[in-house]
Amino acid sequence: MTPSEAHNSECPSERITDAEHAVMEALWDRPRQTAADVCEIVCTPRGWSLATVKTLLSRLVQKGVLAAEPDGRRFLYTPLIAREDYVGGESRRLVDRLFGGRAASLVAHLAENEALSEDDLDAIEALLKELRP
Image (cartoon, rainbow, N blue to C red):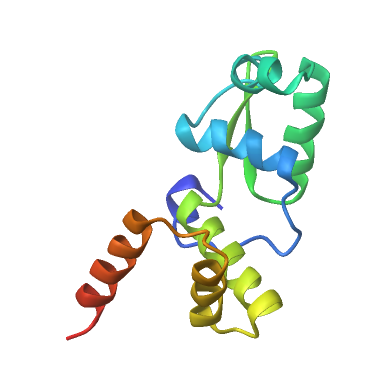
C-alpha cells in the first residue's frame, strides 16, 4: 500500500498500543522520518531510548500501518493509515464496545458526568445544526 492510498485505509485489525500511538502521532505530524528523528520527538518526554523507538517502529511495520523505506544505512518511516481513518475506527470501536453502538449514549454519558464544557456543548450544537438539513 502506498501512502497516497493510506487516506482510504481502514483501522488496522491489530490494535495500536498507547506507546505505538505516540510514535504514529510523530509520523502523522511529519512523515518520512528516521528512528532517530522520531526519538527526538518522543524519547525525552516519555523517558524512552532509541532502542525502544526502533522496537515500536518495527511493530508498526509488522502491523501494516507504517512503511519502512531504505535510505542508505537507515530507514525512513511513513504512515500507511491516515490519522483521520485511525481516529474514526477507534471512535467507532469505543462507541460499539462501551455504548452499544450509540454515539448519543456517549455524549449523554459525557454530559451527565460534567466532562463537557460550555464550549464543547456549543461546538456539538453547531455541528448538529450543520448536519441537519
